[in-house]
Image 1 (cartoon, rainbow, N blue to C red):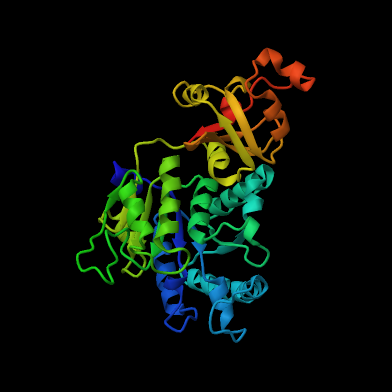
Image 2: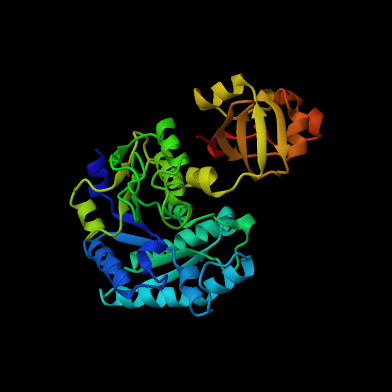
Length: 374
């Protein structure tokens, strides 16, 4: 089943890490970029659509600025990104041009995708580019991003782009064979975990203790988090060694390469993907066990009667985490009331809403259509 999902994938997001784009001197490696573009080009010429999430802008800007390592200050990082982004795009443009492929640059920020209107605009732009045979080259807009609006790393960005584009497959190319049972640099018995259908405590333990935690961009931990999102939305993800000869070709030829993450869940709708993973939560609505059962087991809306508390500073239309006290988040949704209003409605029946708020605008704290069980 996993092989069929990959073979039939028509729209693919490929994430390329900095370590695959640069040489030992930290500078962009034109030969490496040419090789990657040639492999992606073969996929495009096989009548598939590809989006590339590319790291490397900050690294590309270090040498021109006379810097020997990544800056520690935000303004200098942003300056390096501003200088390096054009060099990175020029390298990709030249490499894909030799494959007869046009590229486009898209720079994204988390707050840009959190806004539903801008999210849909970005989605429409991506669709138009792909329909015209263009390969979008996507990166975080490091020149304007600050900590509060950052994706955190391009692994997470690649998962969100896969959601944005309704991709059929996410391929994360890195500098290790995939998810390993140990660090291959120090553990001679480390072996590749070829297939994962659920992120188990064992896998979390492997990642937590640093196994395979090499490379730039958060190591294996951030890649597993990206894979976790793909499992949730029902889209396969492959983490593979981008240093191999034609890794994408080998993947589509059905070879067992890297770690394949694919579970039994069917694809999640685009709107639910946005609610669950793109529109960042502004607070928590704490519910009782009865409400949890109604949402999880019976696919009901969240009513005021099941609410016991609320925290954060949210307003109607914001996304909130839905949690059972002491058990953590189990759902996420777009709330119909502010924090103060939810607190005033906690435990109330729907026939009490008007008396408590002065008006009865909604019966539900979160409607089922705007709710995703995680």
